[in-house]
Image 1 (tube, helix red, strand yellow):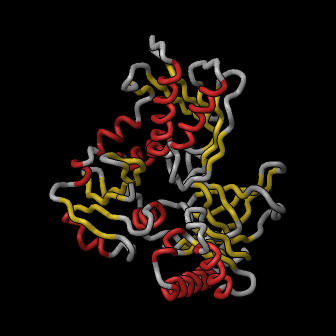
Image 2: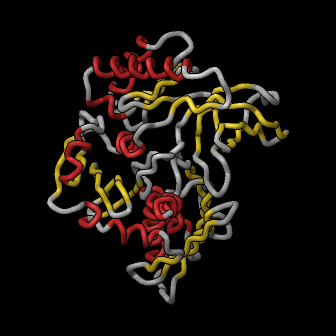
Image 3: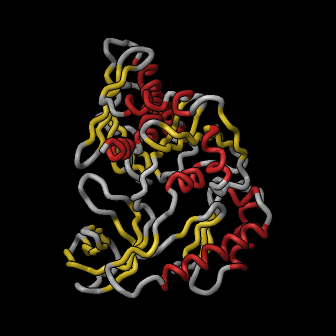
Length: 361
């Protein structure tokens, strides 16, 4: 499953993480993508119990929640931890993170963590030890899975480059509000964060030069004979992801409704009498749709009733297995007495529906 696609589609340049012959996650080029952007902001007002509303400039306001609330008028260096969505500005944090291929540099947070995807055969502890020797007082890093594929010197060079970027960000402006840094290429960032070491990027022939500049030295580039968006039927995948009701191959359907509080998923048997098989098929499809649609936050899944605890556990495992390799943090609870599974999933970017709407405007 370690393949990605880079294609020039009619709606714009697009990247996709592939599973088999179809898209598992999609990212459409969006020059104004703000995820990870860093500003020097100005606190407009503080709402007790909610947080501080921060002026980011150009009419944009973000919400800084948690921690000790700053005072009104304070100048703060903040980073977008969640993009604008649903008419709300970005969520902000004060612990900046600069992502590279092998490391995530944390200039204001001490300690060295490591990806759980690194093998637990001594590799993880060796790489953590290396990076602990490289970081200085008051700074830290997260070792990414891709670090396992390169020499120590490459990790050292990347840390130096991320430090230099941070120094430029700090020196960029003393005025507030001001944008200090924005990811220059969201598609490159998507491929950097999603494609595992040793992976393959399938690219349109017209994107040969661009694909060579995406900065994944451990990836292989393969050129396609036909446009990738057509070969992998991306437009059909996007259109299906906009549909509220999806038919299941074995009969029945799932519906997905986005409310202000949660995404509510309902499994409808449609006359099927094999409740376990229905729920297992639905669980697999729901996991795929959640990733493809970029759904984050609270998700409530109303499965068809099952009488046996062993069967409910099988459905829970099938749902969890569907998220294998998902970079988003996720928490899943067992079936409730009413037959509902609750889960939360970290928002890593704009939902696909909002990306698509932005490209159509």
